Length: 360
Image 1 (cartoon, rainbow, N blue to C red):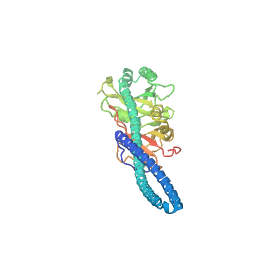
Image 2 (image 1 turned 135 degrees about the horizontal axis):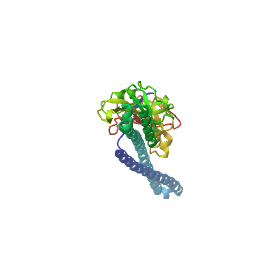
Image 3 (image 1 turned 120 degrees about the vertical axis):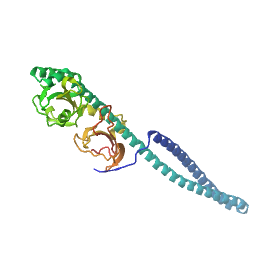
């Protein structure tokens, strides 16, 4: 799908000022048209009276000649006034048409800016949510149960770590599971072993494991793309990981990796489905989160199915708007990040459909 980018929208204050001015000008034009209509009506009646006067003066014969001259003059003047009114009306119609064009453009600019603001709002909420996940994984990687189990992975230590992770999961319901892995990539403890029997599974090929093993300090973390995880019932998860270090020290030796699997769909859907839209906007608008590979990873109305491609025509800009081939208006904003979470190149994207029955 290709798209042609439009110019960036004006600011909200400029748009509001322009619209107020246009409304005032349109009212003046409407009032002028009403007055011209009244002038045309008066001149029509005047011409009829002049015509009647001519007829009556003819019947009066010689005595009516002077009156006939006056009636003819009145008729001529009314014709001139009518011509002036017609010319003024034509000129005003051009001005009003131009006003309508400018007003339409101002309205389009205001809508473009609103879509961009909504897109930014959605991705900012995602960033803040995921920032908390990055804090969680770094904190829990220093938990005494994780540190001891990674250092000495006995059954007793594994049971303790599993119990501790179960307590965490009961308090933090946004997670599907927590996994503790040794340095070879083998899962040695998990938070929900009865629901997800993953202990003993080797995850050494997972990017989140390899990158966590390569981190240089306990201040670092890894955030992975949202993927459907077959070991977690095929549900889409956002996995965060951090190295478990000896003694829980920031610069301690890496003894394992802790992975936390964020239950992505319900959290992301809450954000894209609850943007502040009015009734008309909600009927014609779809909000999405697009990852760095151009995949839909959240959609407000299910039109953009998870994993489907939706390329955004950004023109190299961090945020903006454009019309796509279907005539829909698309507003987008690149992740700004939050605190120590830099973001992953995702976009908030809000589409206003020209045809509300069209689906992505």
